[in-house]
Length: 155
Image (cartoon, rainbow, N blue to C red):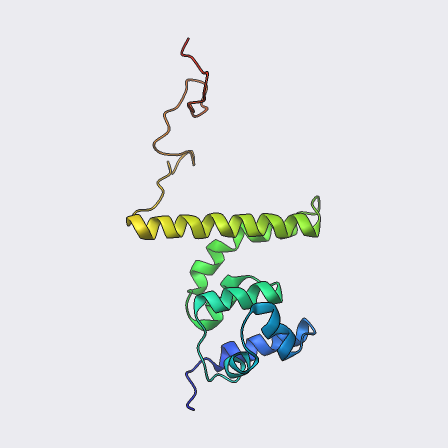
């Protein structure tokens, strides 16, 4: 079988797996892929989908974006923008490792949900560049965005 130019990804995955002290079988089980398929990825014979890369990243406890860059799915410049929030979470000494992982999972789920919504509607969420507030939310005189809440009467 001919190589699909994913050797760098395969080598990177093998290195990450060894650093995590996981056997090929352990990583395959943790990621929900077959042993032979993972072996073929590591040898550069198969090109995994973004979904498989995400499963592998989760099992290896590394960012999926790192694997996307290695696989050529994501540009390095895009990756730098995406890593700002996760880097801040990981660098915060005031929260536990479990809390960091929970925050990272929530952040990823929000990003994926927004991307799916944007893809389905063909739009992106708009924000006011100057304030970072929702562009559609009107401002109150004190600078806070207004929100309709049940039982809130205009005075």
